[in-house]
Length: 388
Image (cartoon, rainbow, N blue to C red; front, side):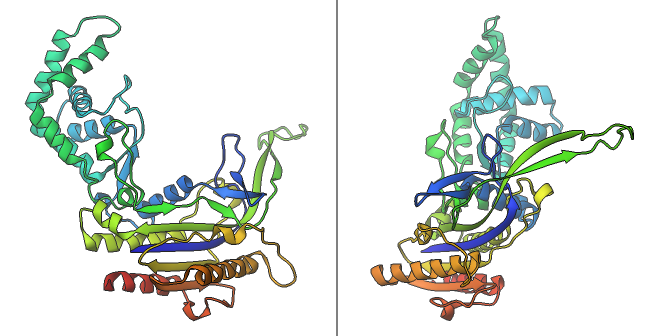
């Protein structure tokens, strides 16, 4: 079973997601330049919303970091262990596990680990503390002096890690029932057998219409300028645009339950949290200077047994506002018409539910499925999931 979420969200002038030149991200679609918000940016916003606004329990969330050594060392220090020795033990344990740790103590790439996985790692280090300390000490005694001493110590330590400890470490990496990790997955280049396939696909949001960049030339006054001094303290330009975005995401329920260790109740809670967070989370780029806090104008939730439909091609021909409708209204109409085309061509067999929320539209093709608010939409989706 799959859950699809289609949204139209019109943002006031903003620069929510920047590229390497500080310009709003964009792309070409249908032969026209479009505004774009990356899926990575959207997922980051949803993860932060889980944490800050929905206040999901810590044990239900993951951390994505290169500073795993620091985090586990801190927990061992809180347990009364000398931090300098704890750091050596943690680096040795991770190296023995197969995760590369650089000289400055950071992992080679960002790791996504559930809170329970991190806690289990700290507990394993404590349980095997005496053995690990002996491994660290033996490696330091055997390693030759010189520039490569640290590297040699790590190699010796890695070879000396007991097989029993490696087995324990291997059992730790199961995702830890972290909701965001189960939804968005992870890739571990050093331990590919511990990768987790994402249960949720998130598309890059693209504007339903063509866009051109605008520039804000700004000046800032130095408050302590002498009265006789004219001119600004600084000046510059910021690129921005205003766009109505089509957003799309889906969740594979079977994959989600697998990622959460078969926990059906937690899977249902994860979907509920995702639907609410996806509708409410907004990227934070340049929000302090532009405040583009614009909720979605249209949301369509779909529950289906198989097959997935992105409705992005509804906007291959850019939407143009005119006397018959504004940008949002015409985007909703284009989406409805495209849905009808797909339904006519391929049928709606296997579709269990359509539930649509439109705050300023009288729906045409989807009017029989219109609900009054987000709570009603989420309730309808969750009722179908619970009953199947």
